[in-house]
Image (cartoon, rainbow, N blue to C red):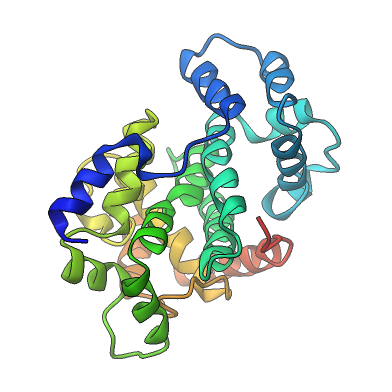
Length: 277
């Protein structure tokens, strides 16, 4: 697929698998900003499979500290509207394609990056935890499109993932396609009306110095992504930490002793995350 064909594909709402009708309704109600959490929970309960997945997510990883969640309304209250919208987009897609090579590892990485970004946000003034977690969850969503549509490229990247001399995945994608997963993910997020505060981190999480707006959140998302790799939640096409980690730490004023504490907390939380969508 050349760049022109790829761009045309991305312009269509069919560029990603369609969402279940109930989840499309949930996203619409969240965007309308005129629904209570209780009413939203009742709507979600119409999709039994998603309801079970949502409650499961609310009981693992970064949310486990909050105590046991047994109902959808408890899960909605715990997650918040932005994070719930993020799960509406990601859970059905990752679940549907969980047997495709690379998808399960990517889901684990996205959950870990979300948790790590949320932990980092606690140490950065002016960055909301829910926004950081949502950006972390969605940051690599564009990779799903590339795995499904550009199988030969992603297979090649997986085969050379452990080569320390190879360029990072996003650079290789840009070289071969003219765009990368960051652009694709931001395009998808824009399609579903995510605010700029979420789109900027998706677009620039590998190059946070290029972000014009939402700089702090973009650097937090970058750190969430890189820390997830440090603690072992890697995706299959690039296994290394990038030097941009040091730049983001410096930009956010996170000193080595605090970073060590953050790493310990992230490792503890990521160990509780289920790798299965």
